[in-house]
Length: 168
Image 1 (cartoon, rainbow, N blue to C red):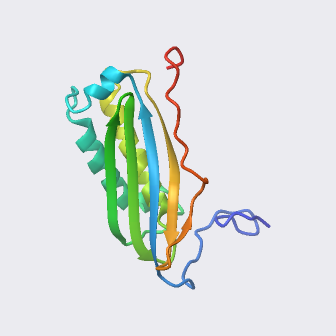
Image 2: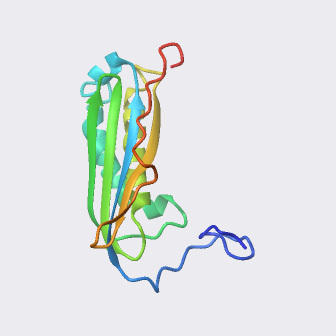
């Protein structure tokens, strides 16, 4: 028998039945960091394809709303709020995606999808001028219930070091 919730006793994949669980207020926060050359970071609002930051923000919001269409065993959720904040740093972009719902299952996949697609959008729009970009995504926080029970995957959010100059 598997300890994985999406695998049944015979090893087949399945969608988890959450029908018996009570609906609760839920929130999740995910973070993506896109590392790039400082010159690229300075040009993100005026790239050949347009404003990468506004486009990434909208793409992240749209993606969070479509998560169950992208992740096969993910439940479709009635999202009550999605925010994708995009901030330029000296050598890249930090993206923070927050998703909220009142439902029977968590909303971390929506937050992760929002951050991931926003990062992919920045990458797509800037790849013509920076072929060495890298990015990473992580779940920062998930909160369940009105009591604010919080689970953090790490004791503190990891900040990725920028790739060394020769390694990019």
